Structure formats: C-alpha cells, structure tokens
Image (cartoon, rainbow, N blue to C red; front, side, top):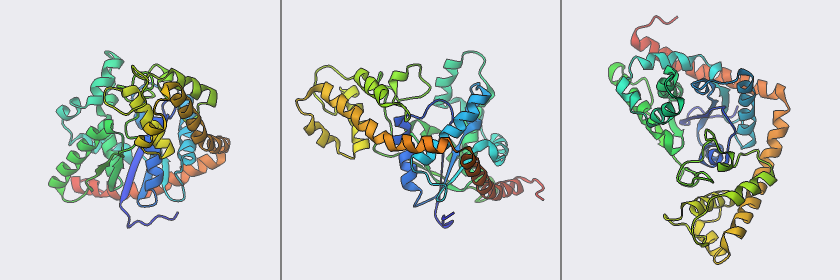
Length: 334
C-alpha cells in the first residue's frame, strides 16, 4: 500500500442504503478519487449509521458490496486508500460511547438533519437517529483526520465534531486532531431533477428525481426528458431558473466545460436539445464506471479480500488513537 503516513489524513464515508446517484458522485466520490494522491485517505462504508432506519439484513449486506464496488469503479484505489466497512472496526462504536459522555443533549437536538428525519419517522424515533452525529464524530476523530470531504448538509455535524474534539483536548491535552471541512465548489450540491429547490437525495420517494450511477441509457434519457426546467426556453444559469441552472451545473461537472461555455453553446436552442445532449453525455460519462462496477461486483473473493485488508489497516490506526483516549479518561489499558 503506497501511502505516506506523513501526509495529512482524510476520512469520509457513504451509507449503504439505496443507490448511489450522480449527486453523490460529483459531491463526494469524484473528489475522493482526486484527493487520495495528496492525503492518507480512509473511506468507510458506514453501515452502522445505516441501521438508524430499519434495514432488510440480506439487502444491507448486498448494498455494502455494491458501495464497495462503486467506490473502486469511481476511481478509489485500494492500493492508495483504506476502504473498509465501519462495523468491521469496533473502535468506532467504542469511541462513540466515550464521546457521548462529553456531548450535550442540546447540541444534538439542534441538528438540522435530526429534525428533518425525525419528522419522517413519526413517534417511535430511535436513539440512534438522535445520536448518530456522535458516531460520525468518532468516525472522523479516530484517525487523526485533518480533512473531511462532505456535502454542505453535513457541515453542521463536522462543526459538532470540532467542538467535541476541542472540549476533550481542553480537558486532557492534545489528543484529537481538529478536522477541517472540504466542500467542493463544483458539484457540491446537486439538486433534484423533479424539485430543483431540494438536494438530490436517495431517501426521496421519486426515482425520477435522481440519476443513479447504475441507471441504463434509456432510463437516463427518460429522466432527463422529465427533468423540471423553468418558464421560457433560455438555457442560462440564473437564480430565478433553478431547474435549468441545476442541469447546467451537472453538465459542467461531467464535461469540464465552464457554465458560460454551455450557455453560449445552447443559446437559442431551447430545452429539448439541451436535455437530450446532457442525457447522452451522462450515458457516455457513466459507461466506464458501470462497466468496471459490474466486473468488480461479480468477484466476491476480491471484494471480501479488499474489505479484510481495509479493516486490518483501519484497526491499526484507530487502535492507536483510542488507546490515547482511554488513557486520558482514566481507563486501564493493557
């Protein structure tokens, strides 16, 4: 594994729930692949987070493999980065409990995502949903993480992580590295195709609202044709045109063409040609990812070996930090 441990550590992860869509790729996976050469990169499949919502056990296992194969297909190299399942490294749950004892109820009750998700779940809200920002803090702090590439909606959780790290350090000395947020300017917040005022999300009820990385060409074309645009027919990036502005952002991110270039290219052409061309470009963009994914997904031995290797490497690094934490709070360490 060709990683220089003198490099600052980067950590991030994705839940294995639902399909990974183009918003997740542009906001996360694409940047992870680019950053792994400059950082000691650690990427987790955060399956512990996933069970805050009830899961089908067999489906959850399959989705963990799906996410692993997509990580690699999207350019994350197991020879450069550590890739592992969160549940394979017990230190995550152990540090989360210790951090719970330094976290205030008021801090968690202010988390925007808890407010949003608890409204959807009704009356029987699990403690895990309330508490999962603390587990996320443990994920980050276990590895001496300096950089956390996330979507803008997760920034509040990293701010809580920083607060907990500073609180702990003020009590016990410099135990934790204080992480920084990395939010890419391009593709950081891809909006829904049906509701461009809300972030594209796999937790929504309408599959037409997102383009999944594994969607076939016919389905991508259909979704693009149905994508909400705006009144008029001008292809222009403007605040009062959220639909076409979102599509321009996606087009720019996958083609590496500036938005101004695309605006000039489609001046006077209307939405029909623009959306058809965007669909064709998406199909071409996703084709090599899909091809590599299907090849990897059929090799169960390789996937298991990748997870085993990743868990061993993650455990070695996590164990070191957790031991310092245990010693600091007064536990007997053997």
